[in-house]
Length: 150
Image (cartoon, rainbow, N blue to C red; front, side, top):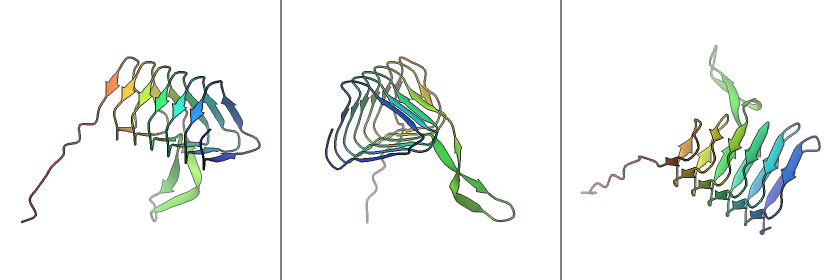
């Protein structure tokens, strides 16, 4: 267990952290009431990771999670009629499942409802908003555009 980690585990939540799990420094793990977090054996979480669990997050064994990864199983609810308003205390949720033997690159964000199969590699800086079948590699297609100041 690293230094300066934040664990906020609500009294009516369920958390399972199996053997040989390594959590580096400055990570935040929040598990709210009635939520379930499962981290299977031999999972490695690098610095500055964030798990925000209001329903269910499961991370399969032998998974490597890079620096700055964020995993959310929820979104804020909002209304647009008659006026636009985001509700700070109302959420829609859906479970997040990450399979076995995955490598999640640095600064990846995984959103609610995503299922990631076994043996998946996700490249740095990807936004994962839909499920990924097993034995896949995911890369961002963002282009680097360099212009002159003059």
